[in-house]
View 1: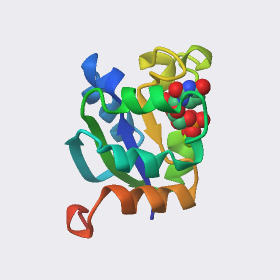
View 2: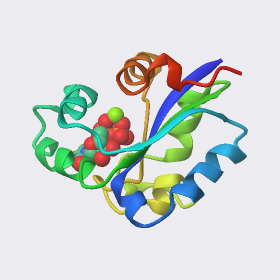
View 3: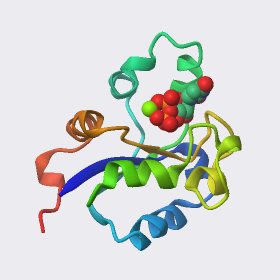
Length: 139
Ligand code: UDP
Ligand code: MG
């Protein structure tokens, strides 16, 4: 079964919608297999967003992502990587349709409520960066 890494980002944590976002994923029929509420270390963000390190928004993104803990989760389901990306909506919350997670809970292009792995390669890398094997529940 496919797995994807989801982070509920600081804007959504501050607005108290962790539960609502988790509920949406549960209602899709996805299975939660690992979770932790943690402040991301800077070196983890450097690796997580390595491909964005030269972008002008990177320093701000880093400050945002460490401003509160995030809810880091591993979810499992059929075709889950593309399906979660679809229910997230596009990166810019202002362009995201109502009914998508970013459309309903995001604020702008940076504060967009949620991270979800982009493809299978990213999902594997993010899983390895975020979770130890003993933190993952095997059904
Ligand atoms: N981001 C930003 N400014 C931008 C583009 C992206 O602050 O102009 C942030 C935003 O939080 C986004 C993250 O950087 O979710 C990673 O960007 P990416 O383009 O990979 O978007 P995603 O894959 O999260 O949709
Ligand atoms: Mg991305």
